[in-house]
Length: 120
Image (cartoon, rainbow, N blue to C red; front, side, top):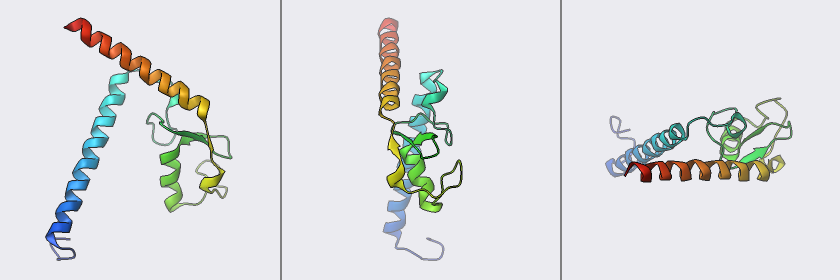
């Protein structure tokens, strides 16, 4: 954009700053997930392999993170598992799974903080 003067330098700088913040957040999330150790498969998004924060059930019966399916639906209006038409209104929150994941994460954090305290 700078090379062809498509945007003012200030806008390009803001965009570059945003990109940097997103990359940093992504790295931090990945590092946190790696520190969790062995995560049960049912807590992982089958598309991204990240820990789900807001799991939802699709009409096909598959469970994915809400952010994953929202991103998918921006470019494709079909269920990624069975290629049937899908609208975001059709997804159902998986509240039980969400609470299990939250419990798991809290447990891991408690163990990590108690291990850190023991090292001191």
